[in-house]
Image (cartoon, rainbow, N blue to C red; front, side, top):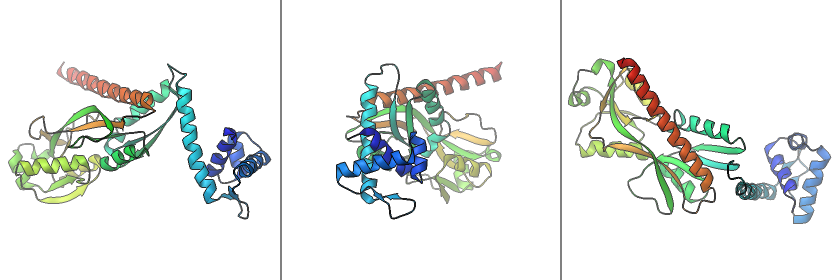
Length: 303
């Protein structure tokens, strides 16, 4: 079976017409038709419904595209074995949304600059869903909140530890923690997330009574609501986010042991281990660079 013909079928699935698919592949319209017809004759199946205008893939054609994409991933993995210094191929990574602001973008940018033939696809979701997708091989790796229990058959590497912080409006800076909880409604960080569940458990363990106001999925939205005096909240201190927030009252919440750990998950037998290790190193570099920048800013203010 000709891999180039398979790539043509994949292109047909990605573009609205044979002409557009051919232009993307550097082929004429007739060449695209020949590739499709050759595969149909070889496989003895109909890949394209030619009665429709423009022609569209049949169900079997769509299934072939899915298998072809897996084949190309394997081919990329094989090619990467011959490149010791350069990373090539593709990797699909799941991330929790809070990492898409300060952690993931600079890490991907640095990797793509160093390895232009490396393609990284991003999907977002909740930690539990992403972990299951890694286990099911729908994702190569994922950046998630560390769960309470170890995840079977998955390798977990700690990217960073984010202590929990109590956020309150700037006008409440003279209040004690007890007064804050007594005088303000509480804004929950999404309790369907592992981080949100950890926060809820810590509040229950400390027997703190809260008057719930709302539940929000984005950490940036939580901060904005607190900033506008809507309530108070407990959230992880994002490692790569600016530490100085003069328009908020920020307190440590409990001991330093109360923290969210961001981890990178991949399968124990991950064939793209070299790529996932490179991503982990990129995350570590972002964390280190962010810490150095915070130290420099602090020194500048103190001088």
